[in-house]
Length: 200
Length: 200
Image (cartoon, rainbow over all chains, first blue to last red; front, side):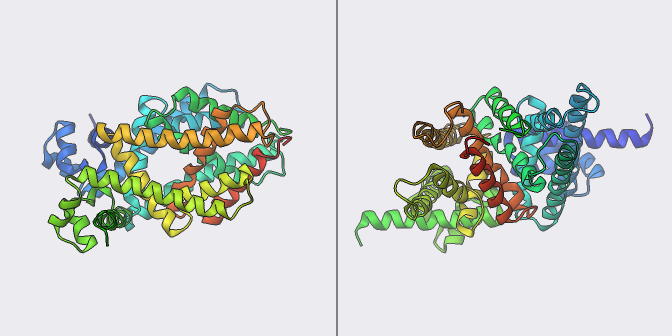
């Protein structure tokens, strides 16, 4: 196996081990030592791939975002071409919410990271940039939907974008079992149908 | 001062110290030792009031919820009698989101607690009950709004309740500075105005 590929794969294996630690025991437990044990490799081996816990954490979060994007792309490829913005947004929201095991893993990683970033200046800038990037992506979809006549031009794209992103606020309800994943999907569908029905 | 009151006050002082530790350094740092130091009292004194870290944490979260409810009650008392459900829900959402320092403190406490509850069976049941209680409260407001003709009877109260609670999903955007508090308020107002405008 080429060295470059092997290096990348080892880092991803370590990142997945970190996700499991975060999902099952919380980010406070995600030390280099614990992650090494979860990955079944030595402490020194992890340090070979990541100089610090922070470097490991940042890679694990970026990898989680990339995997979420891959799942979204897969979902979108099953839609029409071009997809209706309602369907596109539905796929994105479904993958951001903990509605199936893979999405739950990346959702918990992301939630824990945001909280950690609130008291870590280095992580704060990175986390903010990541969220701002996601926001810009959704805003482009909203603006295009207005341009294509799917959304009424009297909608403010920025506000609609924030309201769409707010739907990730269903997460604690699903995570704590207050509502079922299908109830979260019903709410998302209700919201999107109403948003795209223009008159109502 | 009566002993009962003093006991309660000391517990609240410790809870506020715990909130500050969570807000500034994260829940992982909220050990009995760190909280005692933040409160400016001895480790043994904290242990006099709370037998375990978990007991201290549970009290601090319940106290945060109670303080949020007090702020909501204060905001509601400034409204008409009876208040319009739109205004009532606006006050509730404003106090749940980190839009001012007191609300930010309790919001962070609550977010950290939910994540901690995901891998702690004792906390899980308590956190779920707390969130379910909040959900039931909002659903009663929604059902009353339908009964009073403020909301169209073709709205499903459960789904509307979940969508209202989802607005707390604006939290990470505000916390990381991706949007300003006033943009979050604009989104909430837009949502509530649309919800209560019936025809639109």
